[in-house]
Image (tube, rainbow over all chains, first blue to last red; front, side, top):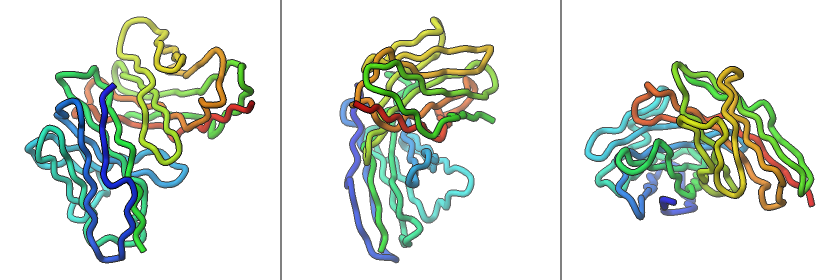
Length: 117
Length: 115
């Protein structure tokens, strides 16, 4: 199957600082990448959808100025949590897909656990 | 709007017994349906999908799912459970008319297989 990586897998930062999370598709070119947030014992909440070379589409209620998404290439998308606060602590998961390769399924990264102190 | 319901928070089954994890959906038009599994502190792994064709879909690790249009269900099944199947299972749906392949996930069902 397709492989998607995330870096870092775990990050602790102080309140007010910014954190960048990378999502890479390792063996395919991802035309679309997604960013999800998962709270403990809860489902995945889609935050935004990004296509290479274009601005991300954010879901309702997600602050686009706080969660900056950049999809600079067909293999890399980044999520930057700006001015992080303790309530931003969560498990962030990315997924990727390709219209040209896959029949509709998304492939997920291993996730990044963010803890803001 | 699309939605997915997983009515059971947890399913308990003894190793070697058959298991079923339930999923029902609501979507406009024909659905694309998926099952994913998540192990602790990990991302989701794709198990299987239904797009069109046979109602019984076979996937990874011996799992299968049956699409039932009249009951709008897509239950996940396995004939003989393993302790290693213990994990969190998510059902997801995408409507045919949804742009950007957006998936809507259920709340998840925790499967616990006892030795």
